[in-house]
Amino acid sequence: MTMSFVFQSLLNGLLVGGVYSLMAMGLTLIFGVMKVVNFAHGSLIMLGMYVAYWSVALLHVDPYVSILIVFPVLFIIGASFQKFLINPIINAPEHNQLLLTLGVSLFMENLAVFLWSPDYRVMKTSYAEINFYIGDITISLVRLLAFCFAMLLAAILYVVLTRTDLGKAIRAASEEPRGALLMGINIRRIYLISFGIGAACAGVGGAAITPFFPVYPYVGWLFVITCFVVVVLGGMGNILGAFVGGLIIGLADSVGAMFLPGSMKSIISFTIFILILLFKPTGLFGKNHA
Image (cartoon, rainbow, N blue to C red):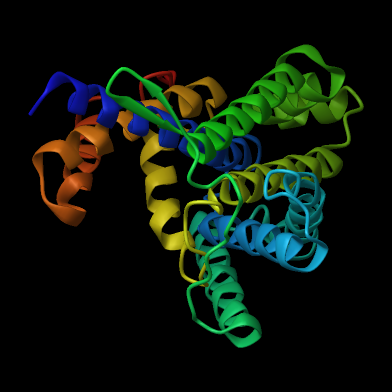
């Protein structure tokens, strides 16, 4: 095993980890604001991939330009999901919310099978085979673009949450909803916006990888488990933790791929997940509550 091979694997893991970060930021935002464990997050990723695929196939736009379509479409889907399904049971026991989101996920997957068949679809782009070289290390253009777009949206989300009035309202609703309500913040509106943003992050993350990843109805399950691992690693509800956690899990998967065969590469990620649950269940950036 040469050093160039090691650096190549770590670079690939970092690029994919950036997309994991964006997907997980959407999931942790939803949990942080509403305390809803959204098992439909993987299906939202899948829908984002299909919106990107059909935007390219029917409108002939560039796959990364399709992100401008994916974001508002998934925002509307997420906001509608929250308003008509989550909102009525927002104060119900957690297992009710979990079962609802799981049911919605199964419904969306089977709807996708009905509409588009279970066949794998591959998006072809004119620049899919373009690579850059730094010595013996190869950088895939499509993976680099996916990483850059994911990081850009993650940075925008972070700025919105930390530097704008909307972000202050979201953080207030997350930390002290009753106090935020007394200060005149429309909690239901904040919940709707937060879920919409979370769904849009999932969709954009999915759209970003369509140039080099097949699209099919059950693809979301490959990512939703990883997103939960990332969120637990970083700390449930912590945006910065999800960002850092995504990069760590991307690198862990790459290290696993270097030493373990096939699908066993995820053993390292799940080992980290178990250790975090055992020794620091609040996550790397989570806070202990008295």
